[in-house]
Image (cartoon, rainbow, N blue to C red; front, side, top):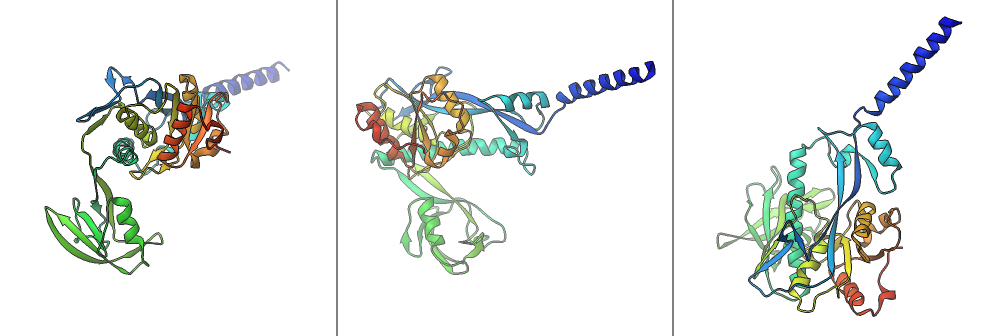
Length: 348
């Protein structure tokens, strides 16, 4: 009996030890937590988040805050099972598989660089959208950023080429150029008028089928030139999800009256140069960040509305669904004047 009891005790101790040790083993998961809320009308580390040079600008009370998600874990700094389970039980955190942020076929350095480029692109698009909304002229061109090897554009186009017309019709910007190229069946030819170093030339390419869409194998981006300088400084934050709030922040700085009327608004959503607001991830955590900062309203891309239903935010923050920049401007006018608040578009 004594030997049997000792065997059971030793086995129990070993099981407990293995269980405790297993809790501290690294696991391939990430924890998403509410991150920084940064007022685009204010300062960060003594430097204005948005600084405009070359045109009169204004400073106003109130807030138009971008909000972020803080991620813990990932390759090289994996969290342990205990931390993952604790986060899973937390109403303000989410546990994600590691590959959701760090795909196995990409290095951490590549992902970081991509996030930085997305932030830079979102800032440029935000300035363009803001100026367009305020009817301030700027130059916008469709520029070739790269060419895919073995596809029709290979050897015919090069980075830096500007597409000024498609099939003889003038195009302004990336979206117009892409729509015009896709306005045919895969395999049909397309004529591009290219400008490079001041010279124009016509290039006719046979399109190819790329995921069911006609394509020439050129990566096309927006080349934007503004009539004054807009500097946006947010430190090492990456990604495109602050685009809408950047655009509103730029507009507030350029508006003599201001947009907020002293109210505190936070939000998240990507933006195109045409002012279209797109969906983002991490809305549940971002709403908590906004509420902790004291935001009265939370602007979110309509296509991200479903995420707001799962947030641990207390419900004291008013959620407004946004599809385009002018929706956000109209919502701010209602908030500023107090008129039409009941008609603001909501997530449902």
